[in-house]
Every structure is written in structure tokens, then in C-alpha cells.
Picture 1 (cartoon, rainbow, N blue to C red):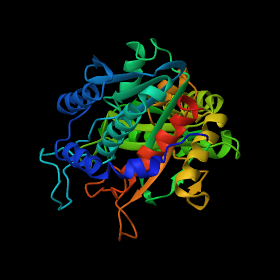
Picture 2: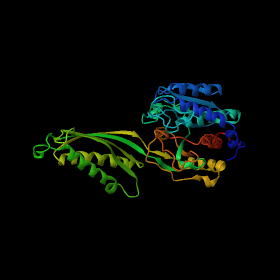
Picture 3: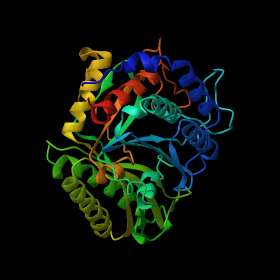
Picture 4: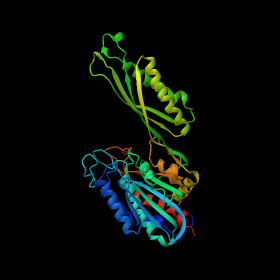
Length: 395
């Protein structure tokens, strides 16, 4: 990658500020579409740096545009802002000050990385051939804020040529990077079902249509979808996450409710699994004499990385942390609404190792004790800047 900048050193020079930003965001978490304080800080920092700023996209989203001195490609980078309804258990000076709310997935770090990247790229404005779009997104945690931003035209003017996003990853040691081509996060569905039978006395089951038995049969048959309908070379998950039915030991209830999720990578597999879940639920219930009312809500598509862009990110990471710290193959059945951006624009979503020091088994994401090694902040800034330089600072 031909550019004259030492982004590793330049990013490390920002480390104290990156930590300050991250800890401030961490102490003041906000739920999706309520990120008013966070968005205000982001917008003000971008204005100070000379970005054209648009606020109020998808309620609290922020867009910063930096137009270079010469025409060229448009590069977009996304940073999510929302926290989770979790009570923090970490005993640190920067622990959440908002009862019942916590940045337990690293979005505080993502915002800090985004502002650090904005700072570095603003310093190169006279050398940039093209336009940089920094998207600070609300409502990533199950609220599809990305979909809302896309619908409200965040990608319309200018239209990006390349999309980038990164996620801190507590499962991996700090300094390691995982960049893969193809699918890296799964498409997600949420389903809910009511199984209706005929209630009655627990001692007289022949006078009832037992929805608990029907639900049990449904749960068992659902497990055959992945094992018998999905090719062993493909990947899918069908999970029953909740089931409720009955209030007394000697009463067969009239209804049972269940809910769960479906996860897939391949769009064709996704379509087939959704169809099979519907068939299994409805026909198994009918075979038991009950009725099933099933609703399947499609949440997000799969995150699928463009091979060429992933290779560019991979090379940027090798330049900065060394080839022995850059890996491929990290895939998760977790979902990410960045997929809505990547349906429109080819891109790369990659993982930044951020495991806290001295912990053999760091707390996972969405855990009350989740935390990161803050050294990841300057690493994330440097890799994104190095990647952007390939497109925007080519000599």
C-alpha cells in the first residue's frame, strides 16, 4: 500500500484521547434511538475537524463527510453507538453511571475509534482524492438502525463505493485481527408461535388436546431441520429460546407459547429453513390435533464480505501488526445490521482482538463484566486509516 504515512505511530499518538472518549461514552450509555448525548458529542467533534455534518438520521444517527482536494472514490465507515439494558458489574473508575444500562458490546470503543479515524483523516484532507463518509449509527442492538438509515437515504448522496466496519472482539487477544472473505455474520430471524389445544383436567387427558405434548413434539422435530434438511457443507441454527404453558400441576392448559431464532449464511438455505420451520410447526401441531399460529420476522441479512476489499483490509492489518497476528476464518452465527449497508455497497466487516489483559477467559459480549484492552483503540484507528489510504491517498 503506497502511502507515506506511519498510521500506527499517528494513531498511538491519539491513544490518550481515544481512551478518554471511550471511557466517557462508557460512563454514559444510551439505548438505541436514544443516543442523544453520544450523537451530540460525535457531531460536535466532527464539526471541529471540518466535516460536513448531518444529524437526526434515523432519529439520532450522525453522518460526517470529508471531501478531499481531488475527486476520487467514496469510502464509508460505520460505527454503532447504542448500549444494552444490562447492569454493569465491573468495579472500574469508568463504570456505567446509568442504572441498568451498559456498553457491554464495545460500541463505546467503536465511537472512540470513529472519532480517532476522523481526526487522522482530517489531517490528510489536502492529500485525499475522494470523499470519506463516517456513519455513526443508532440502534444496532436488535433495532435495525442500519436499515432505517438506509431507508432515510444515508447512502444516496454521495453513493459509497466501499463500506468498512470493525468490531472489537473480547474472545481474541489484543493485537490480533481477523479478516475473512464471504459470510462472517449470520442472517437472523425471530419467530414466535402459539399452540392451541383444549384444556382440561390433568387426570383426564383423553378429554383434552394437550398443547404441551404438541409443543414438545414440535421442538423435537425442529431439531431435524439442521441435521436432515441442511447440507452438511452449509451452516444453520434453529433455536427454541422460550416456552411458556400451564399454571398448575393437575391442569392441562389450552395454550402454549414458544419463541426462538433462525440463523443462516446462505440466502437459499435461509429460504429453505424458514419454509421448513413453518411446515414443521403447523403440521406437527395438526398431527397432535392442535393448531399453531406462527409468526416469523426477518431481522437482518447475512454480513458477506467482498473478497477484494477483505484482501485490502488483510494487507493493511499485516502492515501494521505483522502477518503472524492476522487471521482468517472468524465467523459467528451472531447477526449484525451492518448487513443492510453491505447489501447496497461492497465492503468488509472485520474483528479487532480486544481481550482484557491478564484474563484467560474474558467475559463475553453482552455480559455484565464485559470489558476490553484499550490498546485496541489505536490499532483499530490505524487499520482503518491504512485501508482508507489505499483508496484515498494513493500517490
